[in-house]
Length: 319
Image (cartoon, rainbow, N blue to C red):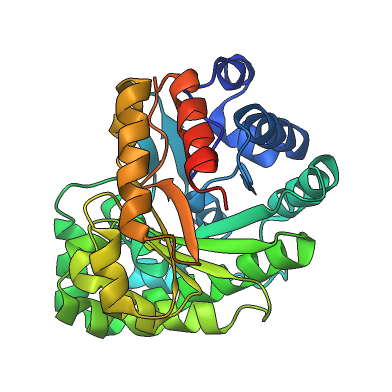
């Protein structure tokens, strides 16, 4: 999950001088915070500093980040005319500043440290576009989906096309893997996922340049695991609400990423180590397990506890 963030004082120092969008769009700054976090924490891979909503701007939406409220879409999608007005992203690289940051970061990282790129998934981006920001119940999104399925699919087709372009540009720029974040898809039933989401996520994953692993992640997706696998990806990411052993029995031969509760990093080293051991025991030393949090590192997380986690994983999983 995102490695650089508000829990690191060095990140906060950079952030104090630049707003969030500037930090994302300045390749030098994005490289600085990406490389610093990866080297300081000692993780096995770095994830580029960026944001899933940046692609909304080339599509014609107004994006802002307000303190304490998160992302706000100034002109959300609510009507047929809004979908028709959305720009089709024609540029081969719709986010050139992300590609520049990837190239610079790849040069700055040690050769043995892989770099991960990412994007939002079609459903999650559509929900932001329609809600105008975050949501708890996704009422506007679901009503749009249920009452105008024709517009819903037209919207997700446009989003999918933009995601294919941006992820392939990231791959061309040098990432060794990409991750598709479907952070909000757990609000759907399996039937709704199959009808309204699966074909679009499947299209994105199948359209990526071959040879680069794809991590497919969602939260609260215990009821959707088989469908996530059907949609595609080399790795299925699990949040902390899912037992890894049980999930693997359902999914069969595929890699698993996850899945410690990020709030455990507010506890102490003894409890962190106990939970690491529990998760590794659930994984049963199977090949293809990427130890990770079940979502992003939370603000105010003690950095020393993040380091305890990483050291414990390396120690206990050494072969």
